[in-house]
Amino acid sequence: MPALHIEDLPEKEKLKLEVEQLRKEVKLQRQQVSKCSEEIKNYIEERSGEDPLVKGIPEDKNPFKEKGSCIIS
Image 1 (tube, rainbow, N blue to C red):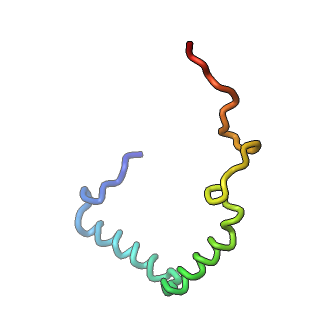
Image 2: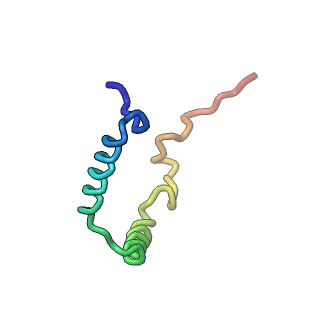
């Protein structure tokens, strides 16, 4: 299926797509950034002890650990 390029559509079709998108967006439940950011911060802080990107991966459980070394002579 060929990709749809908005710039190739007639103006009337572009406006229909824009109205359709705005109708979807108006139905979204919105929250204040100050409230959401506090919830996200708390979520991250609560789980940071379990996060391997923060805590690290134990050597014995690291699937990407090199199994052996390569020696070039």
